Length: 260
Ligand SMILES: [Zn+2]
Image (cartoon, rainbow, N blue to C red; front, side, top):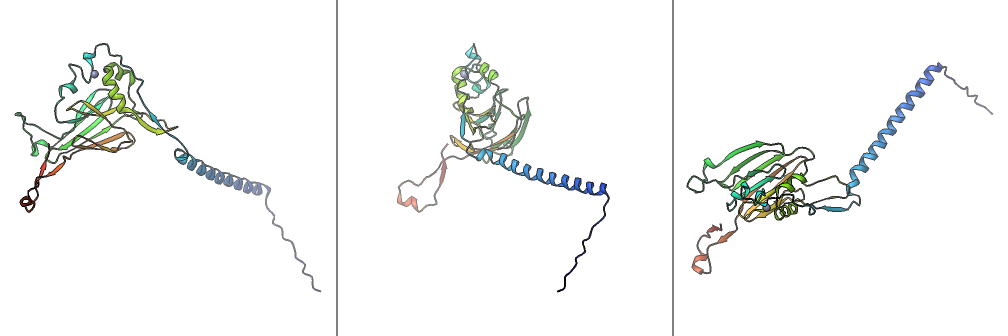
């Protein structure tokens, strides 16, 4: 019977090289482990808002007016710019922290009060205040306009300033427009903005759980990014067929009439 005699082999290595290799392997393993742990932790954080978190409504109903003279109200007061423009067929944005008012360039009138719908009516306006910077463009001949706004990071409504500027009924209208929905643990507040319909001074929200709604014949559409908002307005009146019940009229080409 043949028995194989295996000769064991040994490598000679310097002690400091051996410990050096062990150290290197340990460092690499630790780095790998850290990477894996970080990946899982990150994924868990990103998934957190979806995982069983309740949606809660944030309301501002408890705000109370601190305005002594209601004639000074920034919305309905005698010297309010917003009130001065009431009755006009126009929509605007109100910046609640500094009371800037930006009009959508949906209509333009000449000195005699007639609609201007040619090239003279189109234009770009822009402005910059402490509360926001904005750019407004419009094309009245097509009934469309847009206002883009950039606010400071973490912009939130200045409760004290707003409560000192409005009578209680107007403050109630503003706070109603500010209510928002958010995830339970999300740190989120309402944007200090709202829309105003100059015809009846009603206020409408510019908050990110709205994407669009009608104000009379104007379709308002909103896009939100981190600290900027873009609101587009389109004049979309109801179209009515002007053919009535007359059978002879049915053969004619239908005519669409804008109901204004
Ligand atoms: Zn008021």
